[in-house]
Image (cartoon, rainbow, N blue to C red; front, side, top):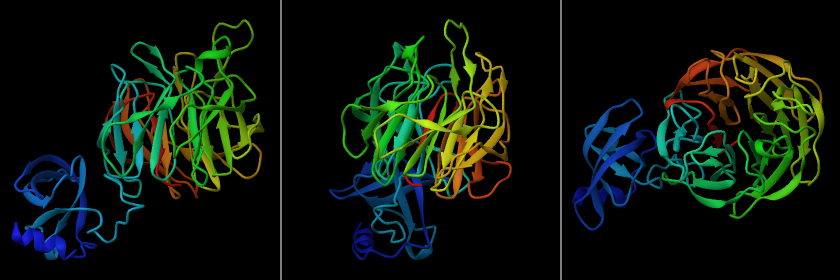
Length: 391
């Protein structure tokens, strides 16, 4: 323990020889030190690792002088290449909730910059499917969806830098499933739109609601979409938000009809959405991701039962208006799927092609072309929601 105290107090620079790990167990061996069992992203388990006290879920494991036979659990401040704004316990992309054989509460995390499988981050307080998500650089908020007892309007949030379970944020105005969320990272405004179950036209909602992600509290009315619809996609460039595709119902109709419509709003200005253009194919269960220039929409289906699914990827330039252009294809047909993005990469995760999928696809948003396999979620699921800590 004297050697460990000396190592940590000297704050050795672990920049070239540290890695994020999942902490499997911890045992106190003194007032300030623990012995850990940890597993890295390659599935290698390290036992009897000494380290600082109080770490759980995720941690940084460094190697003294680069020697892998001398691991030590350290805090993010000791790994100098990881600063307080960028340190994430496992990654900067997050996928929550969904459905497999039952509603799920699991929250996965992924490092968008590194091809790998997702790790467990924690759990939602309520298992739910068909939820929506938005985020700023430090927090992700998940809201709406359907729980075991019916549709929900509750929101809950996670703090990216602290692995663990979600906590209460507030309530949405509408109690709906299959809503969509997006946000402005520069203003910390989160948006939730559309949905089914508590809407104004045969249960279909056209309302847009907003929250301030950096605080907590109930959502406030923002305006309306141009069409009542659910199972739509969203994306933003911090200034504009786009809402694309989905399913709507004509007056007196029985089954929903898919739409290719893309709406847009200015995030800083309350008001109704305007027409932007159309997707290359009308579809529901579609997902969107974006950087500050381009939005890419992937997957989706036709039919009230989702029986015809797509691997389509199409894109638009957010600052303009007009119809979407072909981008490429996902690795498989999938819907309804979850998505998240960094400034360079977009991820499309889960969904169904007849069976629930566990795989994650990725694209380079700034180029065009087909998606490539990224890794896997912790389990197969559909109807999940995704968000990321950066754009």
